[in-house]
Length: 382
Image (cartoon, rainbow, N blue to C red):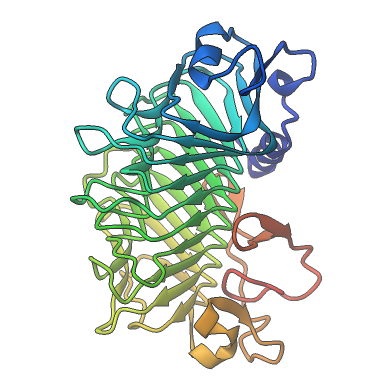
């Protein structure tokens, strides 16, 4: 899929403008005053193509499996809070999804625990899923997917963290060996021994996010592509905390290069290392991997070590005082910074033009960037 087609599809997903989101779909309404009073009852009644509108409020121990195709779950009137309270579906999580072209908007998932200690707010077993404006807090895993090669997952403007303390299997987001993962405008934070984002997907687009372990966080990697694949990591703020469990910030292919294509494009990110003894920015295990490092800002930590065959352009070290207010995680370059406008063309890769067109907006979301000024290194252009 071309970069332009992918971006158009991603924007349509965010706007709910694809055909299965059309208003003609049957609508089931769920809430304490509705005929359908629980999510579990709605899941039993729903059919392919339905829209389920759920009244805002707490849905405690109200867990469900969703096998339907072309299904939309939408919060109405505020947040829908799905609270585990010890309940789970199939020993897996609060929601288990397996339908094609499913969409969930405005839901908060918390308290997912199971005896195997890998309970997820959502367990994605098959099909394709789009998440918009959802949060995952105090779960053993935020979202966990199966190893199913046809799965596609889009995550837009979501919040993953904190994670429940565990034994290293507790990842904020853990995606198995699936076809495609796209994440934008989302915040990953406060890990515990596991990773903020771990993916085994064949194709990964990680654009305009904040992956910051924060004060008190104990994440291992901030970002891991365990089996390599193709990964475009562009426009992200990625920060390792002082209490990290692992000196590495980003890891690629450490558990075996199982995909035929191995390529990492790390472009226009702001990378921050707060580990007292210094961390390691990047670990790439497959020797055959294509690696492009361009226009990244490096704050704290050591120099960016790189193999001789890697492509490197305008990866610049920046002092803390180059930024508006780094002490409060405002990593916008000051207006008069000498680093402004120093980015270089990065070409194309992973089906995208490697030039940022948006930037992350905290606590989740993105803002467009019109390119009205010369491009600067790092995740923020304003």
